Amino acid sequence: MDKTHLDKFYKKNHAERMKALIAADILTSDDLLLTDALHLTDELADNMIENHLANYELPLGAALNFLVDGKEYVVPMAIEEPSVIAAASAGAKIIAQAGGFKTTISDRTMIGQVALKDIPDLTVAKSNLVQHKKAILKKANDAHPSIVARGGGATDLFVRFIEADNEAATPEFLVVHLHVSTLEAMGANIINTMLEGITAYLEELTGGTALMSILSNYATECLASAVCQIPVDLLKKNDYTGEEVRDRLIEASQLAYVDPYRAVTHNKGIMNGIDAVVLASGNDWRAISAGAHAYASHSGQYRSLSVWKKADNGDLIGQLTLPLPVGSVGGSISIHPAAQFSKRLMGYQSAKELEAVIVSVGLAQNFSALKALVTEGIQKGHMGLQARSLAISAGASGNAIEKVAEQLKQSKNMNLATAKALLQEILTLEE
Ligand code: NDP
Figure 1 (cartoon, rainbow, N blue to C red):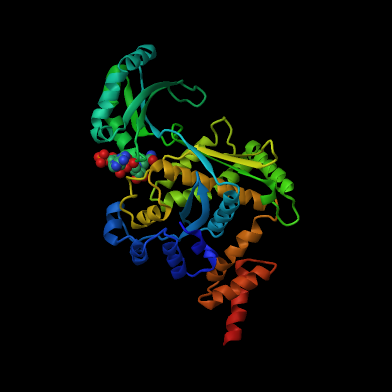
Figure 2 (spheres, helix red, strand yellow; figure 1 turned 90 degrees about the horizontal axis):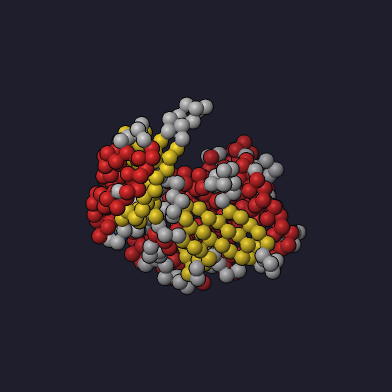
């Protein structure tokens, strides 16, 4: 990648940005031709969902400056919210100056659940399951031989007993967890097929009745972590010294650790980046969001997913860990043209590499949001970019969008009413 072509990327127009990405060796001239073909055809969309009517489009943009495990990335983000891509790029730029992100990606093991009820004797049921573990794993693998042929498949089995709760009037359950290596796939369909392949056998072994068999989106065995370490001289902002920004940012992290009301918003900021890349990559963002927010409660209280601390040498250290069971194949990844475009833009070779980029985006997003919050506040940057959306909502088009947006940024009340009034003034002057 020759980054010099990407200088002042945000100031280029659409065609110039595509040319810059080609000049930087990130895309090829074929991609230039293809951007018009990124739209879903009716035929494809009709085959993706039921009762298809039209396509709901989101802007797809590029976040820059990502240095992850020594490799540079341009990251696609599909998102409707202004300022997210700018914030991710700005955060990543500072972190790249500090050496970039270092990531740790766990083995990609997914969990499937078979929930059984009305077990006549729990001790006997558990002992039967443990005794027949090998046979159960074989049956699971026989149900999906192609993933085994690729080197993956069911690897382990665990039994969980959930006691009856008289207050909540819930019965007892015996839940069997099947651990599966799904390789490059997120694996929902692979696992669900395997689970249905073992359900009858589990009923036979336990004497119980199956209530359901389904993948768990709480993917605690598929975790991704990113860390960054930033010297204080890179943190100075307006009147704040680097040390002050570091200390205030650490306090913001502590607040989000102890206060769920703050933690939800803190994590929403992280997911602004993560969901946008997950969506652009063609992965199931609902699955990632559900797992991430559940993981935020793994201590028993909903807390921040990231932690910011002071290093022994005074640097600021940030760390983010969450379940990230994304795939590089499967679902709509291989069929959605925009997901394929995103894959070429990012240039990732495996699901683990994609995880590394995504968790880094989450940390960059969090860093930028906290840095703004504890210094100048979030509205300055956010509303600056929101101004254009307000101008469009007020009815501006063409050159008037920029004119209204510029005047809005100077006005005390940046809202729709002001945008409408400004547009009226501009149109009257132009008459
Ligand atoms: P697919 O059903 O598309 O399966 C992925 C397939 O890709 C595999 O079965 C495999 O088929 C093939 N494949 C090719 N190369 C590889 C490789 N290197 N590693 C692994 N597989 C490979 O997708 P998933 O099973 O991943 O399921 C994801 C989809 O399921 C998403 O669309 C998601 O929205 C949806 N879903 C999600 C649920 C949830 O989150 N709770 C529930 C139900 C569905 P083969 O080996 O036969 O070639």
